[in-house]
Image (cartoon, rainbow, N blue to C red; front, side, top):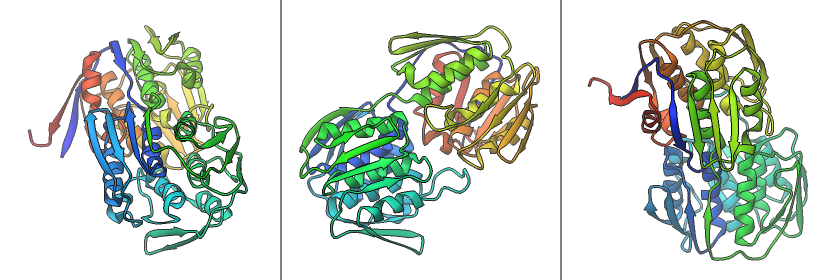
Length: 421
C-alpha cells in the first residue's frame, strides 16, 4: 500500500501549472461516443478516473491511443457493445455519463450503479427523470441500470435540485432528440460549459450553458473528426491557491481561468491573503496568520464543495473560530476527524463544522477518506510540525496528477513510498 510521507513546516514558493479539468474530462470522454469518427483530446489529466473511463470506452469498442501523457486519440467508429463492464463502472461516480451518451448513440445502455467517494447519499433520480422525459425507459435491478428508448423527443425538463451530473447527462441524451429540449434550473459549473463547447464543436446546437436555462436543438448528425482541448481544472488551481495561504507561501498558478475562482479569491482576501490575476495565471501569497470567516458551499458560482476541505485546513489554524456549512454533500466533513489527530480543534455537527483555530498542527498518520479530503491532508502535512503520513493515496490519484511531484517542485518535502519501505 502506498502512502505520502511529508516533512512539514515549509512555505510553498514558485510556479505550478494546472492540467485539464477532471470533471470536464470524465464527461467529455463518454461524450466522444456521440462522434462516430475520431476525436483528439488535449490537456487531458493523467489520473485514475480518466484511465478508468478509457478502459470502459475500450470495452465498448473504442480504440484509444495516447499521444503523450496529456493527449489522446479516441476512435469510435466501431462501437460494438451496449453493456459497460460492471466492475469498472461501479468504481467511480462519473460512469453514469455513459448512459446519456450511449442513449443518444445506440438508444440503449447498461451500466453498474456508479460508485466513487463516500460523500453520503448521491441519488441519480434527476438523471432518470431527464431520460424518461425524453422518452426513455429505465430499469434498476441487481446493482445495475438499463436505459433504452425507441426514439428520443425534445421536451422541457425542470431540475428539482441543481445537479451537475444530471445537467450534463440530459445534454448528452438530447443532442439527437427530435425538436428542442430545455433544461430549467440547470447547473452552471465551468465543466458544463466545457462539455457544451465540445459538443457544439462537433456540430451540436446547445445554447445557454453556464446559465440556469439551457436549450438544445436536436441535430441529425455530428462531425466525424474533431480536435479539442479540455478547460483547465479550477479545483486543482484552487487547491494550490489555498495551499499557498495555508503555508504562508507565494505561488504563481499558471494555465488557469482566474474568473472560475472568484468565490475562492473573495474568501482568501477576506481572511487576509493576497490574490492577483495575471491573464491565465493567478499570483497568491500570504505572510500572516489567516483570519476567521464563515463559509457556505453552494453550486457555481458559489464556494465549491470540492474546495471545502482544503479551506478547512486554513481555518483550523486561523485566528478565531470559523464556521463552514456544507450544503452539497452530507459526509464531506469526514476529514475533520483526521485534522483533529493533527491537533486541530474542529467540531462537526450535521451540515456545519466549527473550527477553533490553533497555533500549529502536528504531524500524524492520517487517512484520506475521499479525493478532496486527501488533498486537504497533504496541505495539512506541509503546514504541520514534524512528519505526516497520508494513507489511502488511491483517493488522491483519482483527481490529482502526480501530486507529490507538483508539491515537491514548489518546496514541499514530500515523497511517495510503499508501506514497509
